[in-house]
Image 1: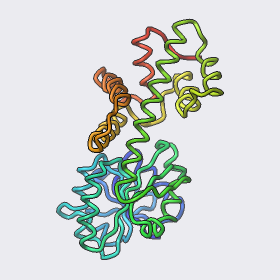
Image 2: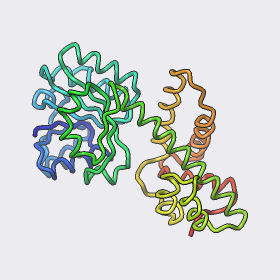
Image 3: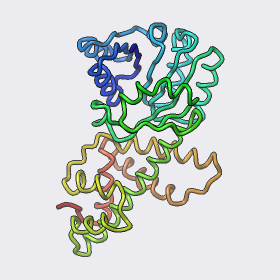
Image 4: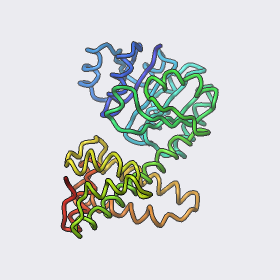
Length: 295
């Protein structure tokens, strides 16, 4: 299958390698010429512009830093719209803003071009082996047509609703992740300060009602071990929390808990932690408590 991919960064580059390893004829575009050369050397076909890439591929994946860049790549001068043929499909895997995604999809639809928003979860380490979780929004028939490709990128692929729904649940999922991670750190910091063993505390929590993915996976593997190397930064979490907060505000739903949690993440970023792994939020909570959560 011929597929185009735009954005060869931390996540997009790993998705590209996975697709090449699975035998896809992959076309790529990125502003970084060195990255294009690197991927050409391992079998990808580089293009000089998004429009040229779109002209030669009926399915194009975008994995870009933010919604405005996606909009520019899709609709701007020499963008995908100027190259796509009728019936082509854009799959946006960027963590993006649902309303902008809907705007892009509406403009593309005027020319017979389909769009899915299909952000991912589970981190960059699962991108290269194709075991990401994918939450896709868009027309169900378009989703089914792209399912085999999505299934080669992720091991858990779910159609969650109309266009924009994928980006909505991705932001809300990360809001919940940020909450459980910070709350677990706070609980363990309190217990540690009172003389409890963090590993024993997790043993109890993970067989009780307070357990979560944070307590079961991230704390044993990343915090107690002091590794902090999932590959998803505090900056990126703050970006997702900003999107999630905007979604809550737009829906006119009070978000007292997540708003308080967001302040903790913004504090960590303000203290120079933006480039640190998101599991390092525990370090900032440790600092406030005057303890260290470790084996």
